[in-house]
Length: 149
Image (tube, rainbow, N blue to C red; front, side):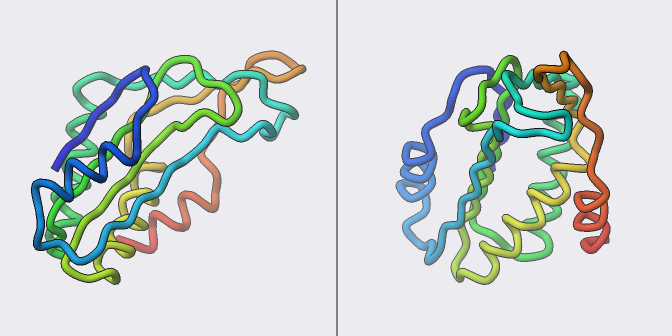
């Protein structure tokens, strides 16, 4: 299982190929790619700045992977999250889960995204026509995460 925090973009196909090569026994792979939207709560987004707490962020994501594996016995998983300056349309996050069966892969991927959004120490700022503003966690993200508790 792999966690990567990076400024550069990621290649979904390469990440999938890496898991497939290492695990010929898998029967399903599910991936989720989050993108920067061009519209936020304060209007049209020109840029997003993502910050994180180095070391703590990786440990948090690794713990979520362990929990996902305990719940669904997944074969492998990768989480790649970008930080730094991002523009509308840029990829932000990849959650990739491989398992023997599709249901486990879908559930584990959903769990990882829901919990990542509320637990991992990332901070987002959006730059709109009104200037820079911090983006708070949404009530819908908190509700989705709490369903897994």
